Length: 164
Image 1: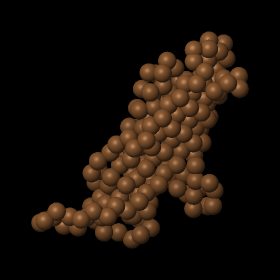
Image 2: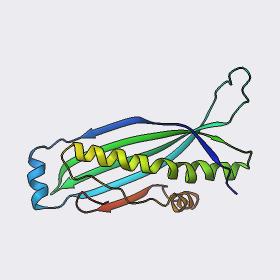
Image 3: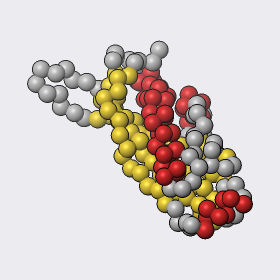
């Protein structure tokens, strides 16, 4: 059984958005829907933090949910987006290494994902595109594919801006 996680904080670590072919790309999108390629990656790292006086030592972990998006219309880049969204988590109970890894690579990104989805939707809308609403990601299947020797990335492709 996976240990329970406690969210200690969450934040945007890196954010980049490029709109290299505006404004002509907006005219192109009105005639032809864009192709949207999305890659997702999850990583975790143990944080070495000294406890303050009177505080117990806690195992802290930073989990990074990285999303890269490329939108292309008629072989012209519409936009490029890169987001690294992180959370700092602690374990509420001791667990085996395998269970800790599952909690960090399945449960934690599931907690972070709605915030990533919101950032991307707002960012694409602010750039003049329809808000891009990412499909829900099955982090358990993504983790299983990593164990199975695949590249560990979950790719989504879609048509126009509303859903990818």
